[in-house]
Amino acid sequence: MAIKVENLSYSYEQPFGEKVGALKNVSFSIKAGDFAGVMGHTGCGKTTLLQLLAGLRLPTGGRVYVNGEEINAKGYDRSGLRQRIGVVFQYPEYQLFATTVEKDVAFGLKHSGLSRQEVIARVQWALETMGFDFAKVRNQSPLALSGGEKRRVAIAGVLARKPEILIFDEPVAGLDPHGRENFLRFVKEMNQAGTTIIMASHNMEALAGYTKHLLVLEEGRLIDSGATREVFLRLQQRNNWAFGQTKAQRIATLLAEGNLALSPAVVTYDDLLSALKRELTGGGKG
Ligand SMILES: Nc1ncnc2c1ncn2[C@@H]1O[C@H](COP(=O)(O)OP(=O)(O)OP(=O)(O)O)[C@@H](O)[C@H]1O
Ligand SMILES: [Mg+2]
Image (cartoon, rainbow, N blue to C red):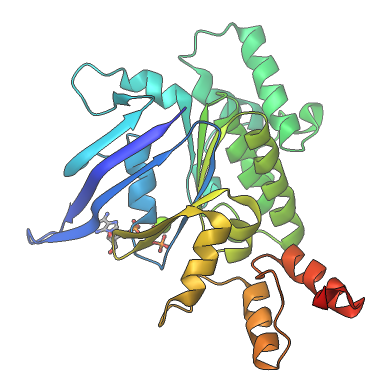
């Protein structure tokens, strides 16, 4: 499913009536099958943007189109949209509430029209996809699981609906390195299987290593967008923007200052490794 956004703006109303502009005139499009990242400092509007894309907030200006249809237009099938867009919020584990893992994951399928057998099959698939042994976990209380396990159950609940677009808000914060890699690899597989992915993150390595396109927000404005690698290289050229750089980029900068300029320009850890390997085997000078 493709998403297009035109002049999108959103202001929060404060208790005393003054307005906070969280998104200002943002326009972009995301093609079906893309893996798009959203980058920017805390408070720049990432969560607000994701909520608007999922139809969970009404824009104060501009339009959101999903597959060419404006989702806030009169008569638009919003409940259909809820089925087709899955949102995993920051710390989704806090949303678990049912008495068993199975019931929790099945919750979003209540109005899906699936039979009981189909629901169970879906729940089993979603939990197994998230790495659980279905028979073992189905009757457990979600509260008895570890933090990382709770998060995987929460994600299974979103997956069970088989959404065409998956939106993740800071999915890797609080996961250990192993859990983070596993999770990102899984998201990549979902994307390769055709799901459109939109992921906001503060984790530069996750954005650089996995997304295909990037949107960069600063104080509610879209200040750059494009192919991930190009955006990272452009951000590096910005004065006073130390923010959007990977660790590999920082190391490459230090090496360049020490007279070892790597080429082609380094963005990801893999770039860094292969550039260094070339240098060390003497291939670097071509
Ligand atoms: N419910 C709210 N009421 C009033 N202002 C809000 C509300 N939620 C967010 N804001 C403001 O809107 C702006 C954007 O917030 P948003 O949560 O979208 O940022 P973010 O990029 O997701 O930040 P973070 O990286 O910390 O998650 C911020 O200035 C924030 O203070
Ligand atoms: Mg946020």
